[in-house]
Image (cartoon, rainbow, N blue to C red):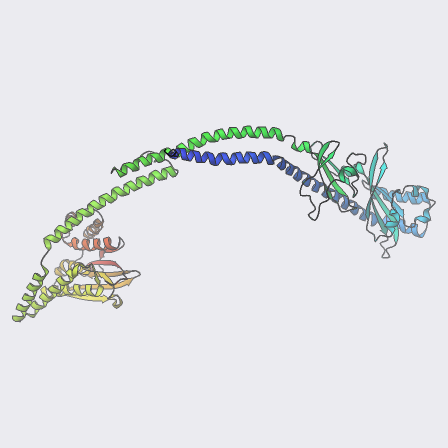
Length: 603
């Protein structure tokens, strides 16, 4: 029985499936979570609304308290009132005169409030019926409490009937009046009254919720602004009291007349009074069902649009990738074809196609470079075969020449044969490419010695930094340059006038060798041709063509080959920053600068 296996899916199918799963699962989870939590979010919004509105109205009430207290200070410090109460204390005036003067002061200081002022020695005015009759009839001995206070005012509230017979609550601010002459005698008591409609105007509701209500309650839950309201002690007594934080963690839902209300209250600074707010739960959560239906319809439509867009987007990505894969399969078959489609795209697909085309171009360049290297290798092997000589035979022949010269007492010939043997022995060097700078200089000096024996008539000056003598150095670098200077510089000067200066020093991470002579030098055209010959070492132009170029510029055909070979060996071995630089010498000859890297290993 064959085991069932999952069908092989294409990249398009895999990406589309993963994208749909990555979108559908979060969207459905979010929809379910939103549906279950939406009511709580609306409740939080109601909490935030009630909290902000309560804080604003509590602040307005506190500002009203401050305004009343500031007005009491103005009344307290009135010089006219001080004089009237002091004179009344010292000399009891007639009731009508006292009330007349007191009325003028009350009218000027009362502002929007009902202001009453009573002398401290009220028992002296027992016959003043008008004055005594205007005193508030409160449950507490507010007059005695004021006289015993330290001058600070206090608030009281009292329920009464207005002109229409409706119940209302009056708010009283009561404060002791003392003399300001330094003796601080009790002169009287001021009473500032504000009816509940006046206080109600201080509270600001919100038009967003039509049934949103605000009021002020005392510590027993009594509705101070509307005593006849159904929102009384039975309602507000069920309102939890916040703990240390001063706020409730969650709004309570309190029932009144079969209607649930969100309610909250915020404490004021006096008498345990609080600003309370109520709003029906249905006003907050009523639209949720319609919003749920709209949400699910919008979710379904959005998923349909998302599915279509994901399919198009996935196809937009996978089709170019399949095209590149098809071209890569052709590469395995040996066809190095560039991918022309999608090259104009500026996104990652365009970068992928550009990278593939760059890879194909690099492979084609590498193949061409390899072919060129193989051609040059075969050419060099052919040249080596053409110039291969048995070293032992050559050394034995040179030893025989030296022996014959010494037998014939020809020391110069013997020395020349010895120097030539040293030259050949150093050139072979067991096939090693590197030597030391000291050995390279000795090899060059052997060549100079042979040339001086052959022709003579020129001087060689050396200026070598001693610390560089044991530094690794590529062999057969200096001798071709010096040979070029001797053949094309020294040989063209009268006997005894030739000078050749060889300088070697370190410059940062490079060894700089300078070979300059006082020969006839080069014309600007010849120098330009030689410089072009060196730069041609980095392309595929044959050496013979380069030599012909130098001849056409008026330079002998072989003058540039040694320079070019040295330059090419340095550039190929160490990089294009190393090699030769040609310039006219200040002594009218040619100046060749050789730049060789500082190598750390021992050859």
